[in-house]
Length: 617
Image 1 (cartoon, helix red, strand yellow):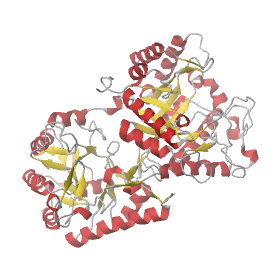
Image 2 (cartoon, rainbow, N blue to C red; image 1 turned 90 degrees about the horizontal axis):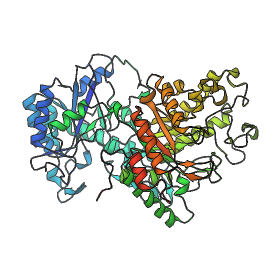
Image 3 (cartoon, one colour; image 1 turned 60 degrees about the vertical axis):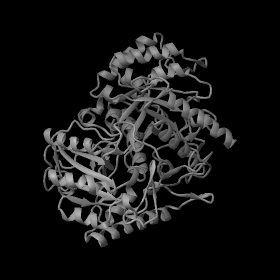
């Protein structure tokens, strides 16, 4: 079936971008060793279906014109793209493009074009030699037809490089190489990427007489800096494989964002496992906004051990458990909180200001993404930081009345702002993840910083939201497509007047973030009747437009009043009741993967995002 990395109900003037790789005659119906190969028969049927269902293939020039506000795209516009430069794009695809009169984008890895005889490239399940790739002459013929635009897929970035001390191979275009006990500097990293893109651009210009205008990032791995380099080299349009396609037209003249997201790279629908026309039709018509999220919030403190070998054993247990449960998301702690007060004593990534307990977050996040198949959101504090002496003034610490409150810093202070923004940027520069979870420490009591916002609860709420937006912006330098989630206490939802005690409000969160992680924890709130309390909470969320669409109900698996686990049957019953009441997104915290709590069968029944949440044989 298709991996839907882009979903469209296809409104007028929206753009669908389809990403193909190899088109062959001998692809198995399902289970071919090359998961990214599509059979020629299925590809031809897909072209027929697109034509018969009102889709109009468009050229790169039309997309560029639409983004510049010069012209609108036709309804149901589709751009066909072909990555890597395999020979089949000339022998199988190009004849069909000519027959249909369809334009397309072909993006070869220029280092693979004209591969010397006897040299081979490790390409997935097999090796590919000179004869498996297009030649410059074939690319020139396709370009001269007027149907095919040649873009860059890099010169030599289609590979992994060592990205952490543990040796994970991560995408070359976004990896600061770890070697000889240290990381590549920012300058060396960006210089390496620039040299590669320059080499690819020059090769295309030399052999084809026309410099590329499009960059297609290998593995969808890019950041704002690398996109800027590509743009400086004339590749002002770029593509990845993440998220949904941005509307490319819409008279965006000069607009750099759509729905709050950068327009630096357009998303694409990656076709793999040889989808037939039914698969394609189903995916193009599916509304992903109806999909639910199932999230486990994980303490990295439980993975860490002073003994690196034990840390690896703990990691293996975590990855296997997450794989067995099958959630869609993991909210992964990126800070160390060994004393359990909710504030960061240290972090798990290289950074400028805080102690690094271990260089662990990137390793764990990468293993979870690649081995367990989940999206990983980095969980970080907003105000709850305990930096070393001298990083912020002593009087920048908020002094609260309740010793149980999280130790926090004054967000008005420039030193605090710089500290926290730098931490978010450093995390994004040194790890690969999909989103941010803002910790539940982002609150202010009514007697804390009373002059902030002139005492107006709504203004205090807004000021904290604005601060988190600056943190997102800092991280987006290295991770442009981050999804944002913020924890919200239940009390401001059930009793809106309590905004004064938290500086939090649901409608403001729904507008500010992609999702709100509502702490739906009746035992923590000492609810006399947990079922009635939860039902009231759901009704309160329903009262807000897009409330259920953008709110994740986060359940507790431990009754912190007595330290005892919530019964597995009770957890399952809560999830069933929430689902029956229309709740789409559900998560839980904590998960004791070392102690099997919640028990695997209960956690899987409650949190699996699979259609049939059973253990694989």
